Image (tube, rainbow over all chains, first blue to last red; front, side, top):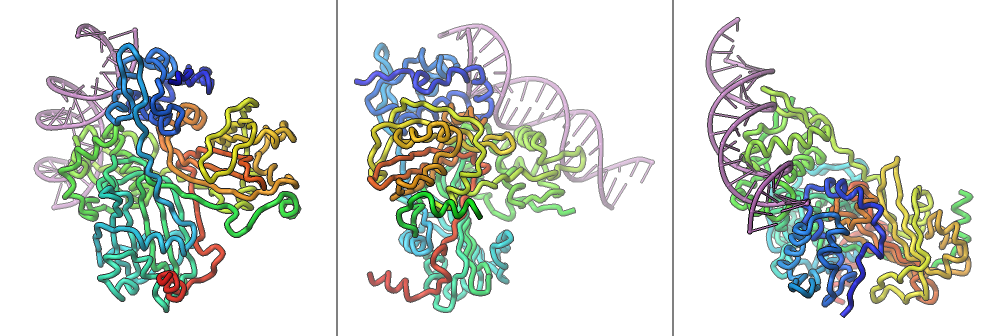
Length: 277
Length: 277
DNA sequence: CTCAATTTGTTCGTATGTATG
DNA sequence: ACATACATACGAACAAATTGA
């Protein structure tokens, strides 16, 4: 069995020990929960592997600069999550890894997006036919006359993983209200022969859960979410589809190929060109 | 001056009132701070505009299902941030919007990435010449014989916004240790004539700040960050550059054009093809 | 101007949670 | 396990400022 050195020996953050109080103060999460989240991260990242004996309470006290009881509270959290097991006289051992779902892959081009959304299981929808228009920034297109608001939640094995809030131009919606309500609007739009999408872009940020999102995704208020804003504009530059999607952070990953349409890349020539520009 | 209706009238979350205790319990952040983050969001999103009178304490008590003093603590937080001003007898008013930094745009192709990184101001670097190799997943290339570990922090107006942890293949590093330490490694790699990048990909997730990252970005332990993993493989499929970048969430945004290399898009034909496939 | 209604500000007591030594 | 200190949260009562009838 591998006995690990104290983490501090590896990453040398002894110099920051004096500032530790300030670090804990920057977050209003209780210290033991902060300690727990660091230890959870170490298990998830593999720095502590399943079966390993982790540092002793004494080492952890010194490393985190907090009292023994506080460390124990953190360990208790992880025991309840099934990640740690403590044994008197022996030590504390890693007994499992957190579920890292990361199975959701966000599309980076239109084709992929449509086909991935098409397969989504939408379990719940709420429609407001008389909706206020969406907030639109400059460069995002013109507003349509009327919008319909559709909210749906996507589930994976009965676990909610995203909330989709869509403002759909009413003239699009009315072509087939029934289907727009119960299947993915974007897939349907892409099938309309007389609608040409001239702009489609997506902006991704980190946001916080508002009460509705928190409730639907079973999150705490203010917990972080991956927020995706998706806008489609038609041939008249009218924003016919404006979506705000909130993803559960633990299922979210975005993978991009940086050489997508470029092929292998060697150094000098292009960059020199750029430099001189 | 606009007097707003209670938010609850608009978004109808009265039905969830019974579950409110559960919602607060899902996070270990104090309730007043959770309330504050919801109100902050309302100001940021423009639901409450500057100058507006927000709901009264009594309304907010009922809406959030918490005590008056708790609401006041939340308001007090936002007063200290300069977002709200309260006046006895009159009400509480929005006095400012949060700084929405979002000025950082993550690149989605190699050229853009290199030229944006080239302009970054790196203010601090830490180098470990005898570094353990990076963790590599399948499909990310083969490991080089040796790596050098370089950590740098990027600043904007003396505010740190990202921590870059790079494992750089030693044979690359040794071509010019001095420059690799003090300027952006990736920009230099792209100038090497005899190195061809055959794979370059980027994976973005939401992570939590570990002690080092928290200290360098002045975050609380366990606060959310945007984590970007960036890997470059050379002509021999060796991962010569493996970066783990932690961005401060408030400066992070990723914008993608979904029609990047496709041009305008009309419905049927392509999709029918896909369907029959 | 006064009065009443509205709205924020303050204080008390109590209970529980967090953190230390 | 205990004693101590401080933060969080509740409910209730009361005080002070503002507004409009």
